[in-house]
Image (tube, rainbow, N blue to C red; front, side, top):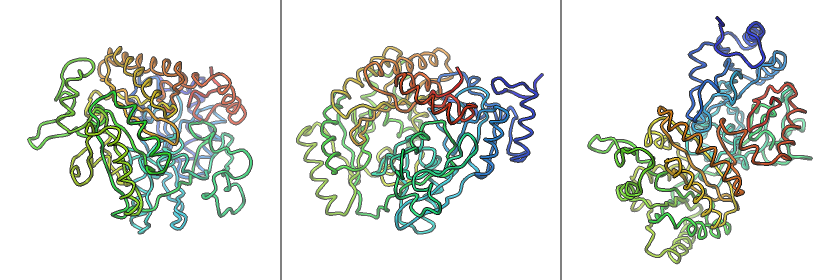
Length: 529
């Protein structure tokens, strides 16, 4: 009987034992874990696949760059592929489990230094194990009036990991990879590089000018598997004292209003009146923020309104909307700036929407909505206050299953309408709920949804898998590209971007990582068949 739960592909038990001894000599016995309990915990996933497909062979925990470099050299020597995780749980994207069975998980949480904060030019340099909580507490403790824009899971997520996976936030710096600047990377051969201006000896402007000289290479480490990031520069926002922001919520009663909401938003965004991450949540997405217990101690969740099988009937959705005073679509936004600018922009925004929607929409602000649990959750995100309330979405649905899917398209109303139609038709076919929101990038439309299902039900789990597969395929056929997905579908999504681009990714992998040891299969990129 093998002493190992899982072996890396192509490795004998004897060879793996030699590799494990070498890793322990480098990192210490306590930082190389092979016990079944640890490996089983790492392989816990929410996606609609068997955990056995994503079981790691070991977990290693380096503490510094030299140990990462040493581990990479050992991975090359013993052909033990490495899958990197930092701080985030990655719920709905594959959790901490590797994309393929047998990879060694390199857990970077012990690398948790805030290397630098420059209060004058508003940037920070962080290691992978630093969370948004760590960074914002550091800023608060040291009385530095800056904010790190955060994604919805906020406190437990790290700026390095979220930025390189192209995560999004809710304030003006919400495009996190765009607002990163300068990385330190351990390459697949163990060499250390600094990108951009940081490649110059003793550089003093590593975190202020993104591009450096020559080809911009930072992009290949974003959603890529060409190296291990050990430091990242991120730009910070000036703090938001009272009076420099104004939160608002506009609710719209009908689902067919989505295109007109977008049509109204685009010119406000492009003109700079709206500069934050305005998100428009469907009723079924926003309900998750209200999951919990009422004053009488009764649990409020999806089954409070519908206990049947399959997707929620619209009558139950309407009951929820009435209960929580939400629309079929809900626009959450914030204005930023000096009070006089906010006052002017508020007049522009409200007049523009009233001219189009009249009394069909409702307007809420702090004056008439503060204290509402869902409103407070969204507005916290839009002024950089940490919250974990997004995870109420999973308690709302129940069953432990979730798979995120994000698409990008031109920010045109007809494109939004078409996407919603495609998605809802496929979800109806598989009897699953439409739990989604949309928002604006610079000129692009983000349409994100969490495919929620009961993972304890094998039949529903298979339906969810088949549904997701069809969504990727049909959306791509209609030119809607998935730009962020989970580990079960990385290869399929990569294929939708065409053989030419896939060939370039492959050539980069072959040239930089000929032994295929850095996260093979990440984003569908691997030298293995």
